[in-house]
Image 1 (tube, rainbow, N blue to C red):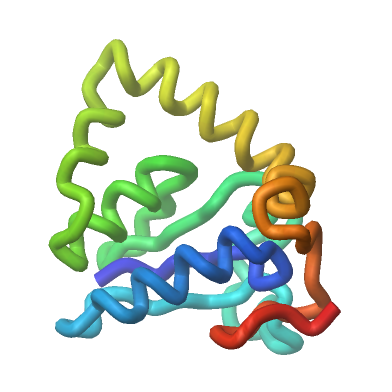
Image 2 (cartoon, helix red, strand yellow):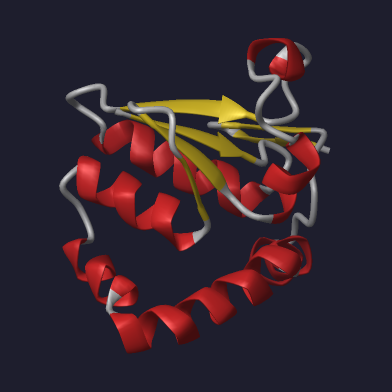
Length: 130
């Protein structure tokens, strides 16, 4: 089981969570929007500002994982994109993590460039509320 704390106002993040949810036929993922009204009450141990900067996840044993470790673990749990494990190999890990940090920092402008939507009030499976 993996709980993913994601930016529900990011069109790219919301799209990935939608895809993960569709493939999660064994209910191994819990997807939590860090912008939910009751987020801090339910998850006081997760800093929403830090989770907005770098994707956070929580394993069954309570350990917090971040960035590509979350992404790779999530896709592995739904038995898709097994090639992502390459990004966790020692040499690749360094470069992949640097690329992820760049993406995470600029995901909203990237979303605007790719899909025309930079940031939403809330993203839903049908699109954004701008």
